[in-house]
Image (tube, rainbow, N blue to C red; front, side, top):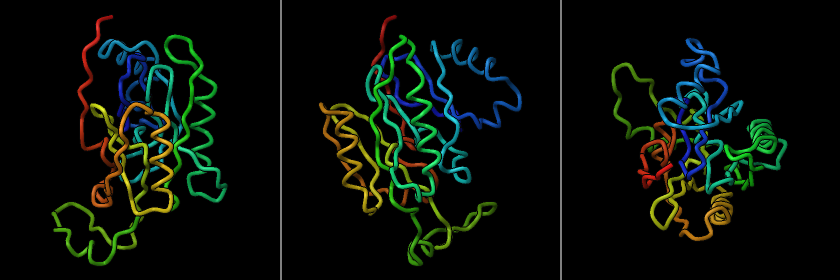
Length: 212
């Protein structure tokens, strides 16, 4: 579902990628925002143009941006103009820089480095996957698009994907800056990404209830 929301931190906002085809083929942006406000009690929707994985996840927004605290967001980032998602990183950062949260505050943006490369299966890994009728096979030629932003905040810690990538260590530092009071724990998740998405996609945190 490309309408995956980031982690509610009392902001009463919701991120959506602009290319929510299965929604926008039936509803306008305004109608989608009205439904989200009705169902979830949110006050503002921030639309982000593109995700990074159009084939596996249709561009889940939890690979792109998320709230880390009221008025603060993490955003995928690269300074390398040759990175395959350089344009998407720049556009997401620009969108967040030019908007405010539901309380009218300018957002504080924490840049979180992107993995340097795509993830590819080894021949051995590909050979261990059981074929299922109707599902495309996985091969060592298939590129899987990783993001450190697909992490999960839990009580006292943040669980962060790791890929054996040159940028793994820097990503932990970037996320630690956004969560200074939590322990940041890296977890090797190559096997998870082979199914599309990552830690946040396969879990569901339960925020503490708040009275409004």
